[in-house]
Image 1 (cartoon, rainbow, N blue to C red):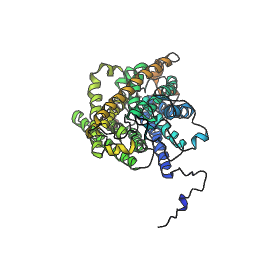
Image 2: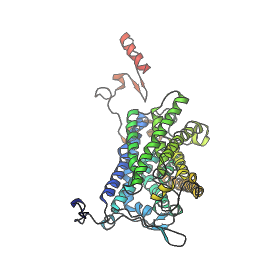
Image 3: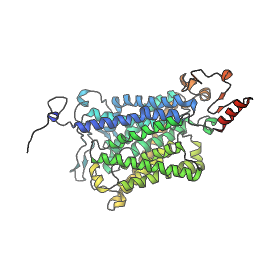
Image 4: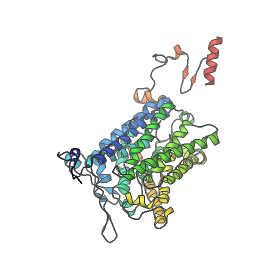
Length: 492
């Protein structure tokens, strides 16, 4: 048998060290870029199109700004707070991730070595076969999307200056705590709380933080709350499609390797998302007699969120069960509980991020505690012999751990987000002034999403004779032909 090594695999360059796995490195950078595309342009498009026309530019810009601001803060100090050496059981030591000596060496998460109670090593330190630069980039886009998701709760009224301050503060004092505690080698990581790829770190935290921030910022104008139609449903679908397909990188990159577990995660992600979308749509048809496109998008999102904490750890049938639950329970909280709850009615969570991310993320974490399969757990988790309650043994304890992990994330985000909002309020108002709220994008940015009217013409109320807010009202022409057209358009 020949020992010949193909020339492509003969490492003869300083840029290709012996520890580098080109396949893993390529997949991890692609996975990271897929998550980046979920934000830019995915959620930028989705936010800009799902809101009322006068808030399209502001909503899209809040997402774009958050992604850019997180990237700079991440490499300057926040990466090491999330994945560096331990400072506290819930926090890493701050520091830059900018120098080549750090970025081109083999990736290593220094606080992730798992020990038995007698001090012996249970699981060695996480050390993927690619450079630190790849891990820094991969984790950066996860931090970025978390802030973009929070923005969904605050659209249509948050002072843009306050948002510009909120992003770096929340990243520093909230996101890094959750990330280190559950992923970077903190106390929840070593205790064995399962969060495969962000059900708690990203979705539960963004849903709770968004809801909390919405409480402090205050509501939109009453007329905006009463009528807030999407300005472009087709573009909403385009943004949602980028979100769905990008989730292959979101969950597929979780194992830090292009391995069998990442394949399982990608398949389960799609199974759960499809099931959830179909369940949500079915419920809409049964109770409201019509399938809502926006509802289908909500169901898709709740499915993607729910599977995230257990994507590579559950079997395919469990992904279907999780999809059934994520398409129905968040639907119920949004359509029924929300309308009966004084608190949920009072807090103006613009896109319902509490339901789609907090409820679905919590649901995913708990169902992972039920359905995590022992063999799949052994492929990924630092704590050996982990399993869900469905498989007996230590599974009951695992379910308890999932509840405790969720409680920590919820409690920390309520307190930290509240403090951050109160501090910002000392400097600038959290809510826009009334004159900006009345006008929207043109007052805030001096720009509008749809600047043209008709065939390349500027809209002129005296010339076109139409009154436009978000519903187009046609003139009643006295001529028979014009009247027929107007009547037909009114029917549409």
